[in-house]
Image 1 (spheres, rainbow, N blue to C red):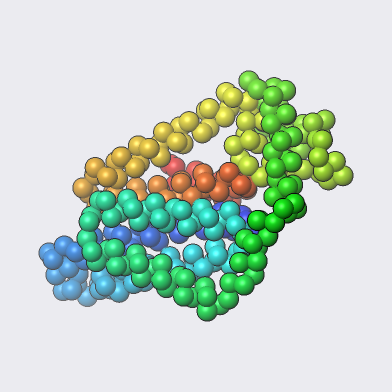
Image 2 (tube, rainbow, N blue to C red):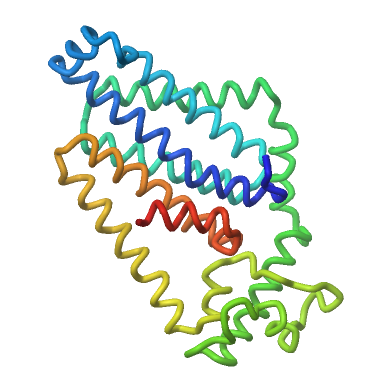
Length: 263
C-alpha cells in the first residue's frame, strides 16, 4: 500500500486486525442466541450469521498474514500477543466451545496459509536476532542508550516535540556517522521530547483507559458495546506493545487512527 516502511504497515495491522476479530465475536454472539438467529434467517436484507462469522474471520486471517509477510518482527509479535489476549478475554466472557473452536480454526488457517506462501524469509529474520552482534539489535540498543542520556539532561520538560533528531546529536556516542531521526521506541522518544510531565499526560490516560475498557468488557452484557470495547482493547494493546520497538505514534496516519480508536 502507501506505507513505505514495513514496520509502519505492521503498525496499521496492529490497529485493524482486532476490529475484524471483534466483528466476528459480535456476530457469533448473535448466532449463539436462538431468537436472533431466527430473525436473521427470516430476514432477506441481511446475510446469514454463519456467513458473516466466516467472512469476518477471513478478513482477520488476511490481515494477520499481511502482518506476517511485512516481516516486521515487532509487528508480528504485537499482533500475535494481542490476538492471544483477546482470545482469553472472549473465552472468559462467553465460555462457549463453539467460539473456542472458531479461534482455533482462525489460528490454524493463518498458520496454514503462511506456510503455503512460505515463511523461510521470516524464520531467517527471527533467527538472525539470536546471533551475537546482530547489527539491527545492536543499533537499537545503542540508540536507546543515547536517548536515555538525552532524557536525563532535561527530565522534567524535555527538549520539545519534534526536536529529537537535533537534540540527540550532542549525546550521540554511537553511530555518529548516521542521522538518527527517531528512537525506535515511542516511550523513550516522548520522554526525551516532552519530559516526565508530557510523558505522564500522554501515556497515563491511555493505560488508564485500557484498564477501564477491559473491566467494562468483562462486566457489560450489551453485545454490540462489548464488541466495540473488544476491538478498541485489541487496537490499543497492539500499538502499545509495538511502540516498545518502533515509532508508530510518530507516523501521522497511524497516530490519527489510534486517536480515533481511543476516542
